[in-house]
Image (cartoon, rainbow, N blue to C red; front, side):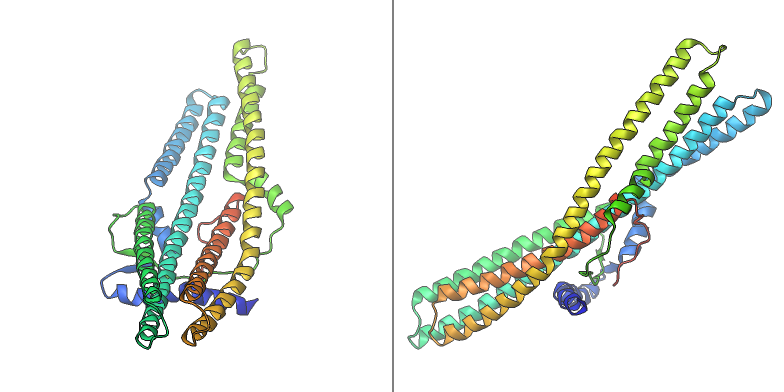
Length: 357
């Protein structure tokens, strides 16, 4: 399995390394995933709002504490404590959600850069075949149609590169947007050694943990606890009946919201687990496909030069390699994104998790 990891990783990050040295000369700053998260955490407006909400809740709790001296009100203090707990939990939720967005955009920017690399390899291959076709035409072993077909293949590859460059530009802008910086800022994701080894997970154990500990579940549990205390405090002969009824309605509402949230979360976990396993299983199959397609292209090139196959056969072999490499690149990034999404779904904090660079 370790040999598979390095073979795939070499394919995926080769272009990133090569382009990185060139771009660095133009003043581009490459950031590792952890640094990208730090930039996003510092610049995120949603995170700043969540911090302000915590500060406001802390102030309200202190006010409730001070009020207890003059006019004791356990209900007011309990509500203030509940509001503070919820605000703190919402901040943690926002932090982890932002970490997920950074990782998603980080990986997608690298994905599009690697797909551009595959497209450039395809152009180089097409140009070699065009030269061979022209040489064969000169000695009478190829037709003008063969040369035209080879030239069309070059033009198609050039078009593919243009599309890949456009996709890369959009992915890089999205990455910068998530970091909260200018869309044209000279900041790009640093290359990373992407893991393709199967990750060991226990679905049942992760499911049980998530249903009790995911951020939104904790928020609802805190709200439910406050609602239960409100019912308990309101259930006496001195409190108006309408107040008790309202407290009971609030309790029923939070109970149903919690049940609904747990149902949705269970579905999300099973879906992300399925996506993780699917991406994991595709990698060795697609890796083998790249090896076979590359060997087929090598043999096709030799056969074409020896006048044993047609130019159309050679073009098919070339397209086969391009498709196989594209599929493998996508599968590797799909796997790493699926792993990230699964960890997020089961409540494993993403903030601070490291990726090898």
